[in-house]
Image (cartoon, rainbow, N blue to C red; front, side, top):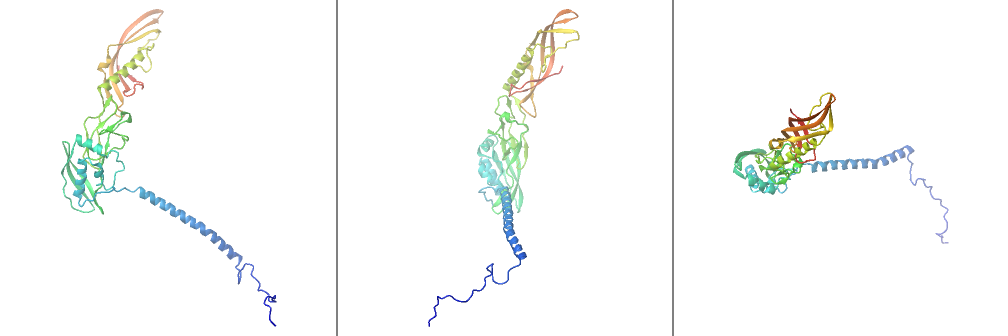
Length: 360
């Protein structure tokens, strides 16, 4: 007889573990511990990743803020070559080439341009007299003799040795102009000064200018014969003839406004008379006049903190007329009084009120 393989078997399958595992099941405590560890593992990975991102960000910021080396810097075999090359570039008004000798490029290059150097060499040509050979390694000092126009000077450069050759540690100085308000429209070597708080320039000759007709700055140039220095400009702003005329016109207009007031002592004005006790003035009868021309002898000085503010001084002769009553009697008053005055006005803005001070 042949056995039928398709017939049902009487054999019973082995029992299956409910968890699909063979062998002994883990205790509940071990299972919970493994689960918590598995949950913490991704969280720790995220924290580690966040820390790495923060460190990378800090590193990138520090890298961005590092001193920037001059781009396409010129390699110099000796300190003398570096200094000589830099000065020759200045003499040729080649600002871009001059910057290539710098160890680090200045952050403010607004005035480190060919146009500014061309103007500098026009008013005071820079000539290299002597640059000595200096030995040593690391950082050395090179005293270079130059002339700027008729002025002879020695500029000492700190020159550092780098893998790319010798470079100049400093190639500029700053100029301190003192008080120089933007309302003057200040310029330097013909270029507008957008930031008078920081004026960074190469060695050379620099002339300040202005964009107003009433005030002039110093005509003499400022000589910068150093690097890494803060040069005082010593500007002495003064009124031009047009400025004096404008100041006189502003003061005269202010006095006329005071004369038109029917008041024995108008507030904020230089004209004033004292009314005695018991006297009563008919204000409608008050007339003020100015005798002579006080403005032809007026003198002016400009305020140190703000050159647009002019301090004036002159003598005013007033004529005062009115009708007054005293002890029942009516009198006609016609008198003159002379008073020395000082006054402050804004020469570039006639709309600003004049401030008067009576001296005597």
